[in-house]
Length: 187
Image (cartoon, rainbow, N blue to C red; front, side, top):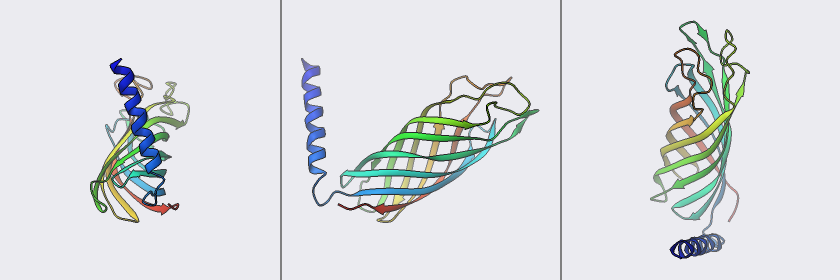
């Protein structure tokens, strides 16, 4: 019975949030950005660079939900004779943002699935196949104003033990920075 009450309460809160999101204070925006960083751990890749595209709806002035995608290109590196190939990650994720103030610092994350694309094999001198993807997360902390977002972020696609060669684990993770521009879509 407690579970039923919690479910009804959660649905009620979601309904109130969606209905109140239709008032004149609601903000819908498209976010377009770029990011770059260093691969961690740097076993099969050295760095990454990418583009971000997301839609955000401010449910309340301090809380946003939306969807996110983009493309991050990881540059393969040689590692003890293993000639790792470049690869990309295409996320399909939910976007969550918390804005304590109208302008200033914010916290957020994208969470979903990261599709890994590129050469079929992890390395040009190996027959080990790269993983297809896995759980994707991208937590970030940053500064925002009406038009711009600047962030320090970590992104990771979890692949388990797929793509391992000898002692090299396959990693699709990076720590870096990003900048994004907000395009308002109306109230």
